[in-house]
Length: 183
Image (cartoon, rainbow, N blue to C red):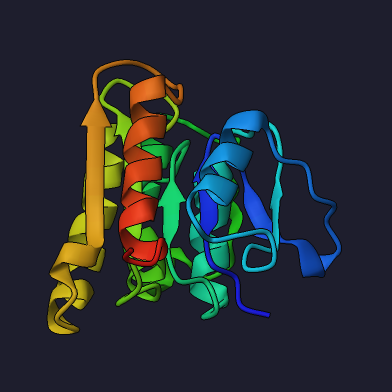
């Protein structure tokens, strides 16, 4: 069964068929079922807030080509900024060989040419903006080479580590753009 969307936001969404139970908040259920995708087309698990969910979604999207679009929030960044700012709880620092093979920009590039939106805050101390931008710059080269430059998108807003109502609205509108059939 295809996975129609991975919705990280502050929620981590994975394939229900992978053994996870369905747990959708009211807002997510309104988006999923009001979007026209329908329950049968959306085998999803939506969990509660999970910092690093955006990084998990990035990893999941690169590994599973059935994922047609993904949104990442709370988040990811370059290894350089994680080390610089001593953000040592981030599992990216412990992935064998990652630093030798291109950092998280190379990981995000593996998602190309599928749609990927990064929503983030400008003053997030856990995922510094310059580390997100470094990652996006590296991945964008591959998106451009594949003729998909418009499919790697960002939305930054002022603030610290959070997933605001504005970020949510941006994410839902963006997912609608790529996943909801035209009427």
